[in-house]
Each structure stands twice: as C-alpha cells, then as structure tokens.
Length: 361
Image 1 (cartoon, helix red, strand yellow):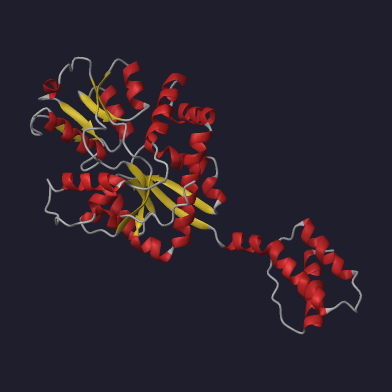
Image 2 (image 1 turned 90 degrees about the vertical axis):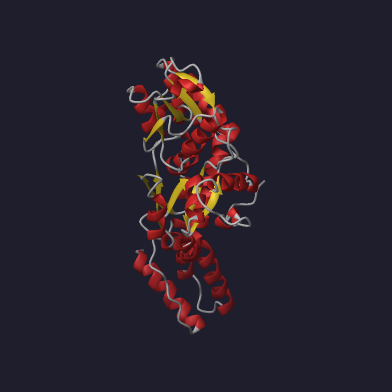
C-alpha cells in the first residue's frame, strides 16, 4: 500500500464516521504509522465514532513531534574572534551534536570583537561570545544581552621572551593583545597599574584573537602577549616563559553567549534552544574527560600533556549555572568608569537575561 493510499483511506474513514474535515499533513510515515492505518482497513463499518476519535488522538501523539521537528528548524550564526579554549562549550555544541539535537543549524564564523556587536544588532550574525565586549557595548547604548556567562574567572597569562625578567623590562617593547577593550586589554592595563608603568611606555598591537597573539609571539614580532591555555604551554615548549598569571588582577567577565534584544523578542525559542545546547555541552565537558582531552589535542594541535593541563584549567574556571556574578559586573563597571562617565547608580546587570538557562541541578 502506498503512502497516498494509506492517507486517503484513513482520511476517508475519518470523514465518514466523524462528518468533519481533518487535514492530513504530508509526511513520511514510519512503519509503525503504516501498520496503524492499515488496521483501519480491517475495521467493520459498525466501529464507533469514539474508537476513531481515539485513533486520531493516538495518530497525533505518534506523529505530532515529527511534524513539529520538520517545521521548527532554526538557523543561527555565531561569531568568534579566533580559536580559543574559552569557546570549547561552543565547539562541543556543534561537533558533538547538541545544537542539532535542538533543531539548530549553526554556522560558526570568524569576526573581530570590535565589530561583533554591530553585526549582531544589524542581524548579520545572531550571537557573539565576548562577555566583556557585550557589557562595554551595552553600556555605550547598543541593545545587547548576555544570555550565558560561562566562567567565574579567566586563565589569562602574560607570556614573554625569556629575557624579560621583571615588569620594567617591557618598557620600550611591544606586547600583543587580542584587541582594544577586550579581556587581555583590561588585564594588561591592570598589570601596568600594579607595577606603576605608564601605558605609553609599552607599545601594544591588536592581534585579533588568542591564536593570532600566539603567532605574533613565536614569530618574534612582540616581546610578550597575553594568552590562555593551551597556547601558553605551547609557547613554553618553544622556549618562551609564563611571566605572570593575570586573572586575579581585575574583575573582568570572560566568555559566554551574547545576542540582541531584538533576537530575544522575535526568536526567543531559538535563543532558548541555543542556550540549552551550550549548557548541555558544559555538562558533557565535565563528564567526558578523555574525549574532551582528545578534542583539545586535535583542535589546538598540542600534545597529550598540554591538553591534559588545558582541560584541568577549563574545568576549574567553568561556572556551574551560566550566570554572571554581579560583583564581577560591578567591578568591571568601575574599570569602564576610568574611560568614560557612567552614572553612579548604573546597573550593569540590565544587560543580562538568564531566564532561558535550564534549571540548575
């Protein structure tokens, strides 16, 4: 019996017994579905309307989810500045299949943090990943919203040539940073302030991202840079040194998921599903150590030992619920006040919306 015959037969019987119009969607029925309708063929004319009403209900239950799945495919674009360990939950979400599980078709593109906010607001991309950039641009007036904050702290490390023995040795030298008003930028400013070094005494260049900063260092274009694992360990293996851990020098947000107010208003279900997929990826990373380490080895081209260290750091700094600590947001606000006037009663948490996060277990 063909699909058309099955549907036509079922439709005819339903019309005849219920005297109503029931549109039947066009879909590919499973074997279970065909068997069910074929049973209609063997029913006697005396079957009650109640029996067929029950049949209709079961048919909806059997195939309703299939219909919805076909109708609700969401397409998204997420912008990343470069390859970095901070984005491991996003890599897992795409490569392991959590986005696909939620009917999300994703495209990952490279885009500088400096232009990502405008790209999101304009609708060219749906998301970017810098929590720092999100709050800074939001305070400046762009309608951006941080919907996931993945970390409670950050693993930024100042890595230098071996001949840099004290902070003052960087005077007159060049240091690579991911970009202006990014986490490395603010941590390096805090470093200079701590050691009373004028920011004009050290030249900085914007590399575009962590992996680009690594290349600037190993090509000897700069005397130092600020990096995260596994690039710091990889640099050490090439003869450079970890000069200082910077994560405790300033309260600066790190990475998460940022979208626009309009995206939440017009595509809330898509945002909710994307958030759920990323948070499931965090749980996967915590539970799948061996597979996670292998992914780090393959993606970052590092050895097993470097990947093990990077994984340990990642798990240590990942937060548990996807929310931003208000204390960190207020601390970051104080840093921004050194650059621009911000009202004393300004609440940076107005640029966050964690209502779509799954319940924390």
